[in-house]
Amino acid sequence: MQEICIREFVRIKCKPSAHSIYSLLSASAVRRNTFTPMSYLKYVARDFERSLGDLEIEKDKETIPTDILDDVKIEVLSVTKDLGNSTTRTTTQKAQGRHTVDTFVEDHRGSSVMILLMVR
Image (cartoon, rainbow, N blue to C red):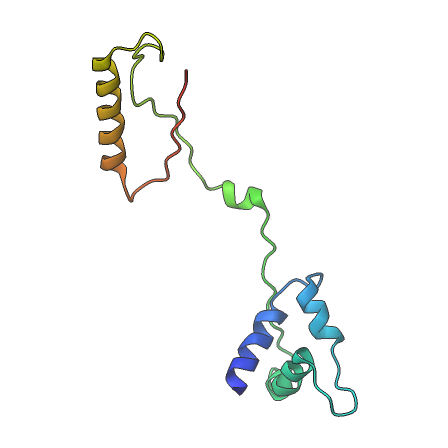
């Protein structure tokens, strides 16, 4: 039980100072020998925190959406040629288009994230 509490304590301490759960942990206190969940975590982890001495628990880096997308490579890949529009497309063209797309999806299954855009 103590190990689980210490792990949770460290997980919370890694949060940015402005994070609400970090604030709850920082503000928690034992009153009249009554524990709240957060004050219990602090109580159980007090020896661990003392053992750190001058060491600090490194904060998680705040991630913003642009950080995630900066490393993403986006390619436009045309799968089919113009097979006519929905009113003029023949049965043969529909079958050809379906086969081309199905083949492409199967060839890339499990290796890529695909977004299929149907242009009319």
